[in-house]
Amino acid sequence: MSAFDPFRARRTALLTTYRRDGTPVETPVTIAVVDDRAFVRTYDRAWKAKRMRRNPRVEVAPATVLGKRRGEAIEATSRLLGGDEAERAARAIALRQRILQGILVPLFHRMKGYRTLHYELVPARDGDARAVRPAA
Image 1 (spheres, rainbow, N blue to C red):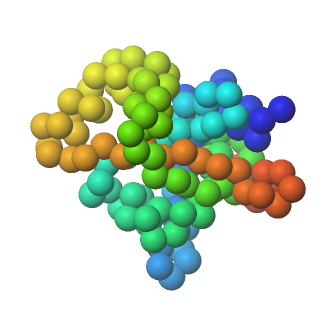
Image 2 (image 1 turned 180 degrees about the vertical axis):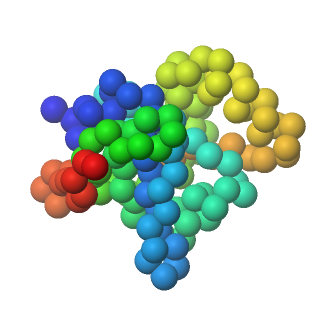
């Protein structure tokens, strides 16, 4: 059983990143789970990318497209991917939402001159990924 099993049935997750002062910031993101690995995408100038670059500790919870929590959050660490790993993540995310994530988001990023970033989420290593916040 994978810590990311609750995300297999949902396309969207609520990703919580942390500002310098520790304030949590929640953002809905498309999530793809392949085997025991979870992937999310953003672009280089997004605030969540800047926050993850500074502090890779995140929380992730199943959510609706509008960001309403639909399950318990787990602690994880974000890891920026490159090369073949980033391509694998891009394909997995594109398969989750073929039009939006397969065509529109990459096209928008190219048009705006953004660099698309892919992250792997690794469950916290406190034995297993543990729930950190109850569902609303």
